[in-house]
Length: 308
Ligand code: C5P
Image 1 (tube, rainbow, N blue to C red):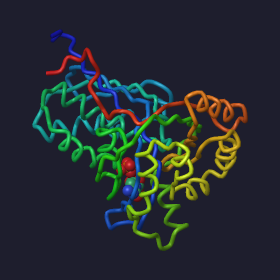
Image 2: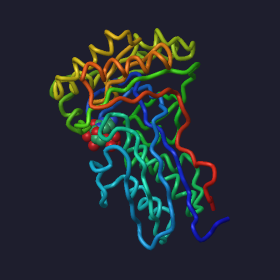
Image 3: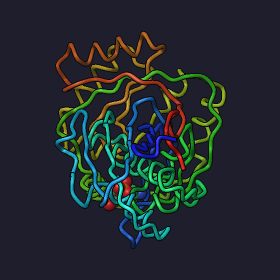
């Protein structure tokens, strides 16, 4: 092992909510959710090296819009794990971003998930995944899912997970806006628009879960659903046009991802996803596009890492 320049690298995916149902706000400020997550092949990479203190640098698209100080989620993850396990060592984290910043694809939670796993492997604390997930849930509601990956049903804040069966590969085009939407503002707008929300129940997801089990992308497309969509559109009315462009280009389904503003369009194939992305670019309704597929693995240590 190259002990002098030890490095551990971890990759965590972003996510799209195939269905997101939002209930009332609990006294803790969080809303009761019922959601079906799919992890997608847009990744955050976190590299960990020895250092005297806990430090983070962020590179990649939108890195300048990620807080680099104490509130950085990768740094908070490192601090939390150190406190939890009694580790007094420092660590240098380098986050390489690909998931859109404040885009509704859980880029911040992916950083926290990757940093937790990277620090755990670097320090040799070897916590069980469930314990990492419990710690991670205090940093972001999506962290437990990004540790797990693949497809899952989420309840509670979205942090209580049950893995779901899914067949086949789903091909996405994501329309990205540089000007992100703060998740709390979208939930506040949801409250203003929805005086008496129903408590989400999993019966609403039966058809979607059946379609996923059958690998029926056409049915999955028609069943995409997001209770936060109206709130996101209220804050960003321009997204109506982005959704329409992807629909007109023949997407199997189009939905705002999470709290937005990213627009997720499901294609018939990898090629078709590229065509959907090209249509959004050509119409001038997005700042950039990404194509990706899902479901993919959760956070994992990359080969070549010097794990303790
Ligand atoms: O935990 P996460 O970072 O994803 O949440 C960001 C914010 O989104 C929370 O502070 C809360 O305002 C809102 N939220 C919510 N209900 C959830 C998840 C998030 O109201 N279930």
